[in-house]
Amino acid sequence: MKKVVLFLSFLFIPSFVFADECTITCPNESLKIIENENAVAKFTGFNFLTKKVVELVIEKELKEELESKFNADLELFTVGRLKNGEFKGLTLKSKNLKYSSLSVSNFIAETVCPYNKIVYQNKKVYYPYELPFKFSGKITNIDLKNTIDSYEFQRVLEKSALRINNFTSFRVLEPKITLKDNKLNFEIPIKTFLSKEPMYFNVISDIAVNKNEIVLKDTTFSSKSNIINIDILGGLVNKINPVAFQNTTINSKYCKLYITNAKIENNEIKVEGTFIINQNYGR
Image 1: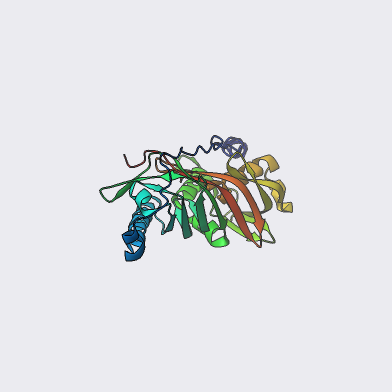
Image 2: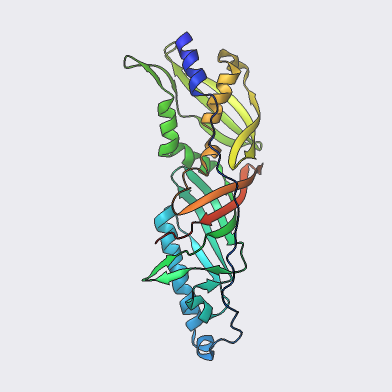
């Protein structure tokens, strides 16, 4: 039993990797706005056609990179400026953004700069500048289940197992984690060599944002939790906190996600932050 306690102490001390603070830099506008569009573009639908083509290319790229369906809506200066890759704004919407362990419902992102530029070549979009957005979304019980079912989360559970001579003496089984009464509710089964049946620990917690990560706060444990040291159990809960998985796997060569605000309302986690498509992606 002593070996198990020592192993738990090492494994479940909370460890967080914090991303740098997000700094948004808008590009300088390189051309004056063209006040008068070509009359042919206005009345033949060429404006809409060009806009729709670029939107479809952006949607296709997002689906390929983030494995989720998006709707893109460009706000133009003029047709001529769109041909040069310049536009006022871009709104992205996804009913369910699901990528690796990330799962967010009703994802909406809108560009924050008054001037934006892309390069459209060979039916592909390139980004000469970072393209920053402000985003909002919500994490529901379905999203939490998606995270728990993800490879990344299941891998953490696998790593929790303590094996001695091919004998598993300790393991955290798949927890049940739900939003109820505007709190995160954990039911955590732990299997040890001491019993044929798993022990269950119930934990209730609120959330907060700390340096780009959704962390737990005001955590309370069930009366049975004194079987395992509270510090150890608290570390375990932080390790399997599903909302802490929400922004780590999406950060890649394509984009970055910064969470600035998160709170539980109506048994859903409302999240806000910054979403950035990286500069020079695609080159």
